[in-house]
Length: 128
Image (cartoon, rainbow, N blue to C red; front, side):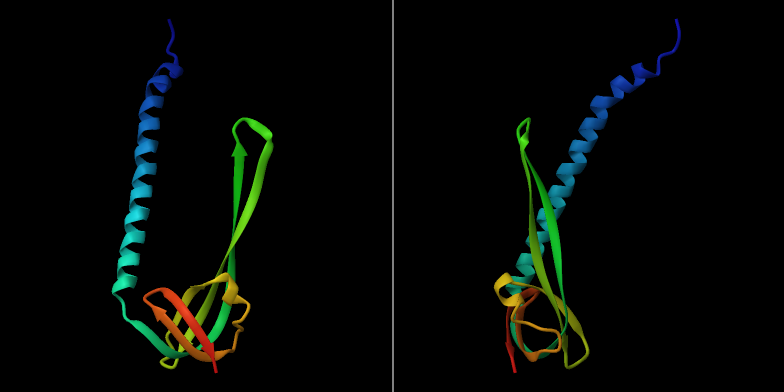
């Protein structure tokens, strides 16, 4: 009777599944806690309006693959775009903020004006 490496592997698979499950749940919980802390910090931050200049803009496109059960003919892909602008203050400090879709096209690099924000939340930009 010889040694079969599959015997050890078959007993390790349930342990690996549990470990992966625990890691995934841990990441989800950590992400939720981080988001909650940022939300609370933003709520407790003062609403500021300061002179600022738009120094850059960027987009981030996320692609999502959706499956409809086991029917591969019903699968589809969708994409979403997140918009960001980097503002520079008179002090030289910079801050990148997420910009609403409907305002992104109204902001151009080089624009100067009054930026209103609360923590990391963009509240508005009034060009001068």
